[in-house]
Length: 307
Ligand code: ACO
Image (cartoon, rainbow, N blue to C red; front, side, top):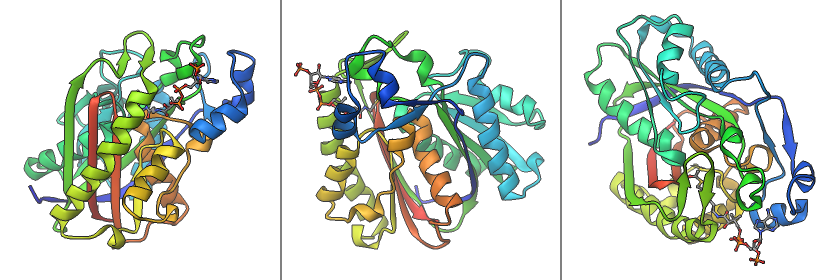
């Protein structure tokens, strides 16, 4: 499928409360040094009691809509990628429809593809936009992960943070290549009440499969890794990013990192990186971007298009 998409505008939101690695030293047997050298993470943002997943999604969405400068009644689709929201039903997307004052003829639903959720959402939006009467889709990745952490499990609780990233997406003539992969596997990551993870298993999966899929997608797009300006990747571990860069023979400067400040925000991770880069003026129209994510499912996904 070669229908194109264009990201018109972006927005992000994280809670004010910061949990530093030093804060975790008081909760579990760990150290700032262990966390920094194994993962690259320093801080993450956690919701306080009374703050909601919907609040973050709403603020990120509003920033994207305001920055796009569009009439919000032209939004025909609202998708929220999430597995850690405050309630399963109603969906976060449905509540956004009401809070944003969108008309009732929007297609609004949540989707769960864990940390690959934003790219799975992008592929869904691409299909929907090709048949939609309205030109814009609002795509949000939002997670209240702090509420799914076992704070006695040092192998998981130090990794994750809360946040939301949003994008206004429209149809474009310029082609996009998006590939989404799924492998049912309950052994590496399982989220029931809490997140359980075989860290090393996920690590090995990511460093093997992510560069392979990036190469496949770039070959389909007919471009080389050297022609990519920015690799906007899921922020799980700095060593995974370094390994992907090495496999592709690309400099780390092309891999923007914010995991030191936000930790792993799952489905919010890629849109938060994108929105932060956009706010900093690092993304120029016409530049080639690659979006890449991986996580529970297992799922992994890569997209490439021109910014
Ligand atoms: N502080 C101190 N020691 C720790 C901590 C901690 N926070 N956590 C684990 N350890 C210990 C372990 O108990 C183990 O001790 P042992 O050797 O005495 O048994 C030792 O450190 C090494 O543990 P490993 O798990 O082998 O550590 P590793 O180097 O693999 O790093 C990590 C763990 C950071 C989780 C890494 O494997 C990783 O990043 N994996 C990828 C995770 C990921 O990408 N997840 C994304 C998907 S998440 C989703 O979809 C929801």
